Image 1 (cartoon, one colour):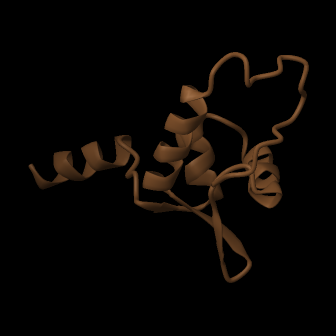
Image 2 (image 1 turned 135 degrees about the vertical axis):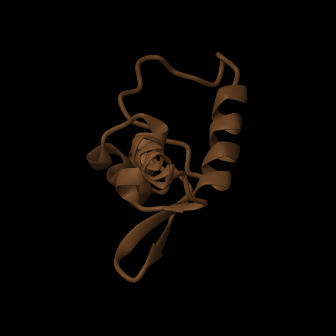
Length: 87
């Protein structure tokens, strides 16, 4: 039984409160390169721990809620990159 429990944990990735760039990019469904760019530009909420970007899942959830609440009038479909900084 112990082996089956260990195997089942390997199949389901653990989602932590503080994620590195790879975990956060998987969570958001974007590439790590894109997320790195967004973090550097201040578009997504992130912080640096040493020289590495870190992302709090709760802050990303709040940010996604705010982004999804934006009205269509505020969104310009011709824009190629984000212009709103993270709050």
